[in-house]
Image (cartoon, rainbow, N blue to C red):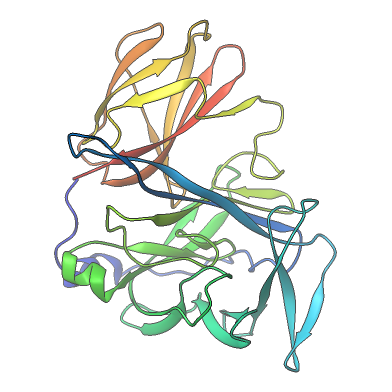
Length: 314
């Protein structure tokens, strides 16, 4: 549960991996990305920093292919929010034949590299890392440090490219990821290449595209079909952040817990075996679960699913 302290260690582990599978293409329509941001929301009189979700937002490409011409180049129009909601034009997305994804920023009227899904370990690239409403260029140098594959709950494989920036390298942190067919673990536009904490750090919560959903579940606007979704309400984790040991409290009258699962922002699942029963249970995570931001999903006997975020610190 300690941050990595040497870039050479990451490269040594990742170099032998061979990526030969056929991975999903980057979406050009009917896709939605949901993001959230964790940061300091309150400082107690004792100086303790309470953290929580400081923002929730999303982007979508409309179901019908909304091509737009920007400065003579064709892009897929990107919109804020989910399809059917009142939206704001958030720029344009296009991909070329080499696996590179480009973003046209609506305020600067300029194009920036967003992802390179054919990058190799050892490459360095300058990419866009801000949101659509940033008024000026927000560019960051990323170093590619790993290359492997993931599989979502539908059995779909995705190429995963580990990236760090100079700040992460200096602090011994990283990596975050580009996931082919999905986007970045820091959100569609906001992959920072570091999990430095504290800070107002964005994360990709989920991405839905046609008949698949990342990291898990069934089609829809990032929700599981046929189950009641309760976000945060009804479940409390204390302390949060924690070092891998915490108490889980359910609201009065909650049904029995069937299972608990921890998901990281790259779609990896960790099983949890709590101690106790009823409304209060204690959880001790395995030592090999790294520090970072996680989604805790609690399945109840009545079919309800309770979701909350958990921060694990070194």
